Length: 101
Image (cartoon, helix red, strand yellow):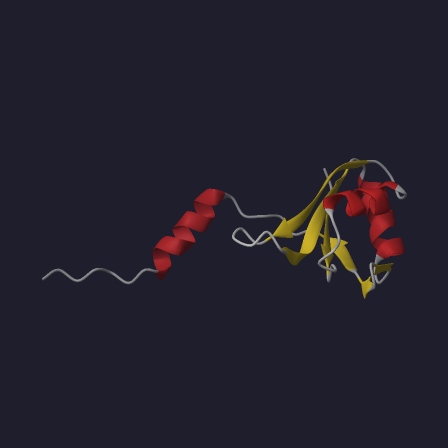
């Protein structure tokens, strides 16, 4: 399932707004505006999962730099997230070894 990253979102943009915008380009499986855990305020970016890779490419090409609620949005192919195991290993390497007294 192709995932598209959308950046520079206005704080008023909702997941429903993204679904409506991208559904013109093809079938949307889901959309999500990322919000702050504590305040619930938009962090200014989100993701859209498209059903078809060709629709995702068409959306990127036609909607990048489009105006959405007064801001030019940036759209690109989302990067693959790393598996949790790799994240845990990386975090473990950052910790300083504990010194025995």
